[in-house]
Image 1 (cartoon, rainbow, N blue to C red):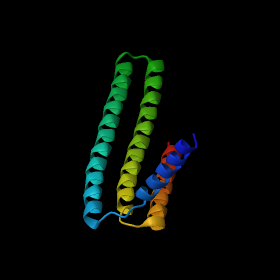
Image 2: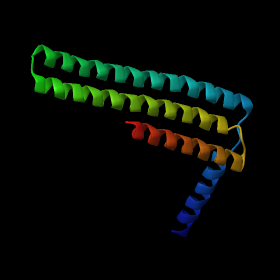
Image 3: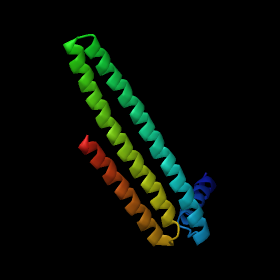
Length: 137
């Protein structure tokens, strides 16, 4: 039993030291480029999802107007505004997460405590952006 605990502690210590390993400039550049490409794709996907959701909401408003049902128009308009607000939040969060991935990859150029601090700063920036997006909604 103690051997298992000792092995687990050793594995955890090894994993932690590997996490703060400085990468070469070429590795960092490759990883940053990949993160940037992934980020652009993820933000584009979020924008496309939002555009589709907004179009659906607008169709519901148009249908309610065509049906001359004022209660349905009001509800559909309210729902469309909600959808638009959620969409803006989704895009802002997707962009913040994309920026975070890129920032974390750049941190790999640093060593030890500087790398950890860089990643912590990136995490804080992401958390702040998410909180701001939710507050704006």
